[in-house]
Length: 446
Image (tube, rainbow, N blue to C red):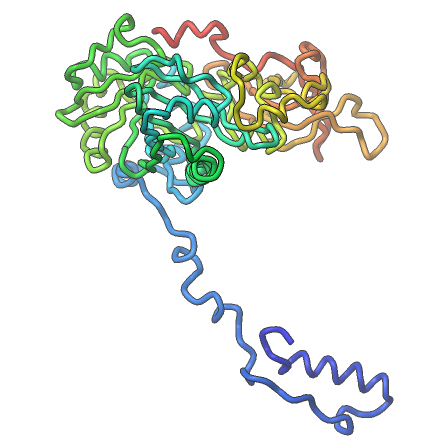
């Protein structure tokens, strides 16, 4: 009888019965109404669980600074994130080009506080991570970082992030912004139901740490005057290392890590001090033209380096090998979540969709994300699709468009011309390696 309990649906039923019996509705009578006698709106059922009350807004400690400095925001999971920082007369494309070039040429600053963070602590912490992630963790030394990949039981990528070993029995695990609750729930599920014998504690620390990414050739010069107790030199603090000390008098876990391909650091400080430390870094970076950048610039910079984003280059059916991360899988590990599924014959099919780069024949043409890719644009409809575009941008440093895509048998197609049919015509593209900029990674050690 639905939410109206017969009040309105009754009239439809009477009309049907009237036709069937050949009698007017007035001679048939009425069914018995049940409470409520007045139809109830879905809004009443929803009550306060709607709009901002249903989907709460989360802001980072640096949100106020970004707002005061003209940031345009976008929603990422439940968070408000600075999308880009336009200056007078700039549209998004001009602002993003400027931000990208600032990072490549000098130094940029980015609010990464929304990253999920989980403290994994206990005598069996390394063994727990060995089982949860494809990577090996037992031999990772304290003070080192490792990029971790997590699979579901079906063998497909579900999350990734950088993990720092703070001590023999303590790890600082980061997750994707949207994946933090899912990853913690998955970890707790396995810990409580599959491996209750492991001596491990899990604590969500997403809100406890503000994260400030300082990226670019001058990143070290900006941070050195502010840091106490940490030697930032390349010899003392190489790429993928973590040190604890103080910055601006505040305790910090300083990561030497980069999602831009440039010399980079991620400054983790207690959230209450996040804005003050951010402002101090901005002031120290002024002589170097330090430039705040948003999520759009972050996407362009990582795409130039072929770095994936889970949920963009992956769609729930991608294995580590599909997205070029087979190197991360621990070959000598006895087991990890998803290991048996990776052994299925279908997972090694050479015609699986694999991550590649695409260069449009017209360098000014920027492909649409999600656009389908075909071999023969003259094939009859429906054309056989061989893949789709996952990320597509204009690269200011390269002076042309770039795109990432997943294509059937993609790694065997290098140099091949494929086609992207669009309403305005077909766009020709060349399949390339997904690393467009600094393929040897020399700038990471800047």
